Amino acid sequence: GASEVASGVASASPRNDIPRNDIARNDRCPLFCYHNTLGQRLIFDFVLDGEGTMLKEEMNIDAQALTEKIVHFIKDKLKSYRRDGAIIGISGGLDSACIAALLSRALEREKILGLIMPERDSADTTRDDAQLVANRFDIPTKLIDITSVLKSFRIYEFFPGGLLTSKKLSSRVIRAGYRLLPRGNNPFHGGLLGAKKGWMRNAEAYYRIKHRIRMVHLYYYSEQLNYLVVGTSNKSEDMVGFFVKYGDGSADIMPVADLYKTQVRELSRWLGVPKTIIQKAPSPDLLPGLTDELAMKISYEKLDLVLLGIEKDMEESEIAREAGVNVKTVRYVRELLSLSEHMRNVPEVCRMD
Image 1 (cartoon, one colour):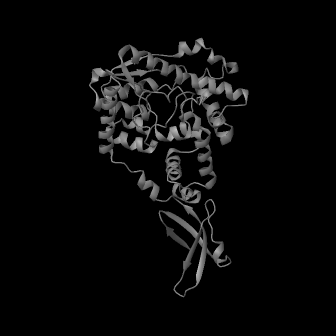
Image 2: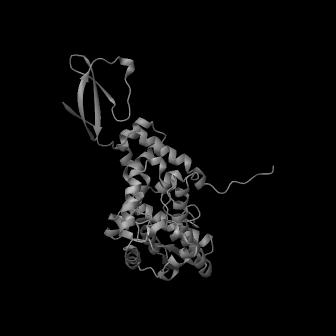
Image 3: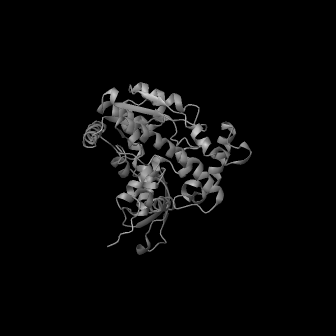
């Protein structure tokens, strides 16, 4: 028969062949012990169809209180850094939209500048989405197409036969490639500690330079204006290394870097970020067709629950149940945390004492 367990539904069948001391859980098939009215001990082997509720509840936020805290943080850092305003890269994605909304609450319009920095491979909607965000929160912008700078590095020549010259074709190829590549053999995972394969090194050089060029522009204008560079990273990206070191991972302050992606989405709803931005698939906008979740091989909804469970030092089996994944996925996320540790640290110094 079927029995309801927490928020999931289980298909169960009794098993009486398991000794009392051998009760254990595996990836997705925990054992359920039940004593009936006759005192008989029945053990059910079942597979959860759903997720737990504890971690999900801990993901809930008080959007108003968070907004007030972040706005105060921005104002305080602007003062302590002795800056006259703030500059942000507006990509048309969720995180930069959330930061744009927060900046508009913290500072006067004339003290904010948003840079929109598309390039050849950017999605066709990038400019319009970025401008939509800027218009919604009344933020002055400057459009800088970085294609010519990237061409000077000849990065568009990395792939033979004009593979990436057609966005439609390259999008299909890239999406198919990422789907076929196992977790440990795609440019994201494989490059966290240094890639050994030539094609992967080229791929990393190809997309990472884009965020680094954008960061150069941000700091160039920030220094001309005496503005604070405001980063847009969230906690999910930071913990697993889904950012470019000295690229989008660099800034003077990171207002939402202690919020998971799903929390940033919820805060963005409260702040009035346009629905089209909230609902679009998160993407680094570095390669045609590539999304965050395709690169990481896991959705943010599940990733965030796994990360929170790891942060709370929960058992792997319990994290798996709460997040609706198997233990192998929990271990994969742990591996990402370990491989990306160096990315969250300042350069190591050889101490002389």
